[in-house]
Each structure stands twice: as structure tokens, then as C-alpha cells.
Length: 230
Length: 230
DNA sequence: ATTGGATTCGAACGTTCGTTCTAATTAATT
DNA sequence: AATTAATTAGAACGAACGTTCGAATCCAAT
Image (cartoon, rainbow over all chains, first blue to last red; front, side, top):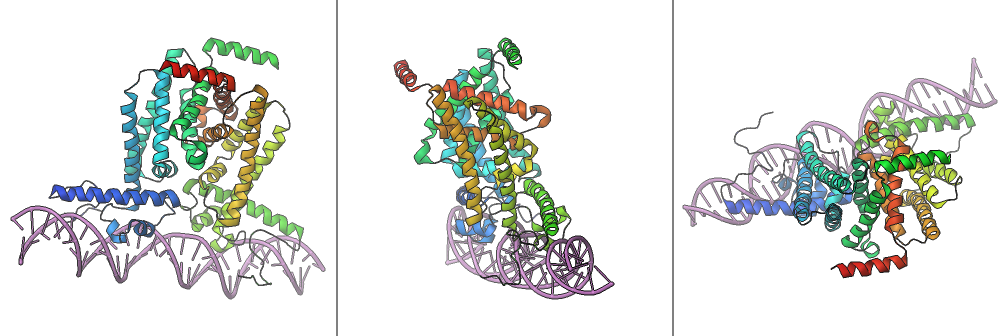
């Protein structure tokens, strides 16, 4: 279905006459996105109605559609903004270190810090994973893949440096699981801040990966011993 | 709202005239639960409509309501069945060992095995966590709490045996995260079976917890050294 | 003060939602 | 074979869903 030439597509590739109007649009969109994030976090994407969003942001139902084309497009905007932000911050921080173990600890801290500060956004990002379809979904998936690849790279660097041998994939996925599960149990009064949590999880994960994975030679020796014990 | 004496409450506290009818009811309910689990897993609880369930189970919309009182009650039945099963199997298996580390490995294997075989049910259980309200929700929460307490107990036993000092809560939650995150990435052709996965994760987690957490004495020594390095 | 685009709104669209009513059909027991 | 209870289906209920439309209102630039 082609769009008529007189009506602009609602939502994003925005081109306005005045720059101040553009700024206003962007600011207002940000507010709406914030409220929407809150509601999606509380009730889930499917569970939250457009009327819920209207109530939360104090704007009429029709008014919302001035800022995005559809509910799905709104979810895309939230996910993209959240993920882009965490990725950029990570890249900046990683530039400050060259040592593999420290770089992994930076990764963990960055992830947890952002997770705890923007708990709502991250819950929406984790929880509403397979909702977006087609182009929108694949764009988010691409950002996610880059984030994942960076972490695998950190893991490979550690293995190279210390001559370790373990599955980077399982390790990274286990680490992501540890960190992303937080939104189901975190309680600031019991569990401390991001630094403390990052140190604890970093300890478990890194010591586990380092002292748990033998070199190839040692692994063969261990397996022989295990076979003998039966 | 009181129920009339002539109509029985649909769904559960079932009392039939004949035992064979009871058996039939139970079998049919099981089939419906199976199909519903599949649909909930694919589309999510909110995203799946009663008409989707009707189509998937080959039964009319109204027919479904003979077996449960509401959509929420259906989710409760699925979660209860899934969780009860995994808990019972765990208890049986734990009786076969008294050694702390081995018992933790049993826990991990039991969890992963059930997770991979009943991937759909476990995804529904993990994903649709805060949907149930009031009595139904608190009953599921109680089962979950028991499961959690068992794992904390295993952790405390390990600490006692080896004189370790770490946060059982953080450790258990990290472990749950590692395991429960699987449904987002598991691929049987790449990641092997439950035993292999359980061994890998068990290695990371156990070695991490054991060699990562010092005794109280060692911890003080380490902190002093860290302070000196700055 | 006026103009023109950006923004917001009330009201309604057609669709789908979870649920329920009544009646028909099936299976088990006498 | 007759009776009774358990099971299924067709059709519809009101409510809520995402979305759209045309008109009103606001705001910045002239």
C-alpha cells in the first residue's frame, strides 16, 4: 500500500522546517518513550495497551501516534535507544584498558551498572525479545549481535593470553544469563550496588573460567583419571 | 459471589460419579495442557488468544472452559504441573548422594535436563512469571521458594565442608541465571546435550565459587595486598 | 496580527478479546 | 435399551484492542 504524497510517514525519518520544532519533537518523543518504557516494564508489551500508555504519558491516544507509527514501532524505538546507549558507553570504557581480565570486568560492570540504573529499559529489552518482526527486529538483532561478538572477543583474548581452552560461546552465554537474570531478583537493600555485584559475579565467572578450564594437555590427563575412577 | 448448588466449579476440585470418567477427564486435560503450553511458549501468555488455544487443541472455544475456569487458571495449571514435576525428580535424585559438590552437580543436571526436554514448559514458567495474581500466584511462588531454598542449602553445605565464604544468595541467583537463560540461545546441534552443558556450567560455577571465594583469613590478606597496589 | 505548520484532541472505526449461554452429542452405568 | 452424567459445539455477549480521521489548538516566524 503506497503512501500518498501529501501525508508524511509518522514517526521517524523526520524533516521539519524549523530546527527548534525538531528539538521540541525530539524532547517530547523522549518523554513519551520514558513513560512507555515504564509501562512496558510493568505490564509487558502485549499486556500494556495504548490506552495505558496514553494515561501514563498524559497524552491523548491519537496524540501518541504523532510520534510513532505503531505500537510495534514504539517498542523498536525503546529497544534501539536502550541498546545503542549501553553499547556506546561500553566502547568508551573498553578503550581504557588492554588487559584481558580487566576488560572482561569492565564489560560486566558496564552491563550491570546500566542494568541497575535503567532497570526498566533493560527488562523490556530482555523480556520482549522476539516481538519485533522483519526489518525492525533484524536491526535490533544486529546491535545485539555486535554486543555479543565484543564479549566473545574479550573471551578469546583471555584464552590466548593464558593458554586456556574452553567454549567461548557457553562461557559468554552463561555470563549473559548471570547478568540478565538480575531483574528477577535484585533488591538494592540486600544485594549492594553495581560495583559490588560486578565484583562478585566477576569473581565467580572469571575464576570459574580460568581455574575451571584446563589447557588441552591437562584436560586429557583429567579425563584419563576420571575414567579410572569408575 | 456464591456459586449455585447445581453447577460445579469448572476446573479443579473435581468430584465425579465414576472413576473412569475422572480418568478420562484427567487425560483430556493433560492433552489440552500440552497444546496450551506449546502456544504460550510461542506467543507468550498475553499474546496467545483463547482462539489460538482452541485451534491448537482442536477443541471448540467453549469446550476448553469445561477443563479450566479461566485463561489465568490454565496458566496456573501449566506452571504448577511443570514445577512440581521438576521438584519431585530433583528430590529423588538428591537422595543418591551426600557429597556437597556432587549434589550441586546433580541439581544443575536435573535442572538442565528438564529444561531441554520440556523447553516449552520451562520457558512459560520463566517468562510468564508475574502474571498470576493472588492465591494462584502465591501458590506457584511457594513452590519456587522451596526450590530456591534447596539450592541455597546445597551451597551452604559446600561452604561448611570447605570453609569457604561467599554470598549464597548471589551465587544461587547467578547459577539460576546461567541455567534459565538457556532458552534464549540453546541450539542442540552446537551446544551438545544436557550432560555436556551441565558439566561445562558446573565447571564454571563450581570452580568459580570454590577457588574464587577465599576463606575469611585469606580474604583479609588479599584486600591488604590490593590496597597496597594502588 | 497574521499566517502555516506542528501538535493535540474527541470520537469513532472495525476487529478481536475472554467468557458464557443453551442445546446437542457422546460415553458410562443400570 | 434406557437413563444419567460428562463432554463438546454454535452463537453470541460486552468490553477492550490498535488505529484513524477531521477538526481544534498551539507555537514560531513573518
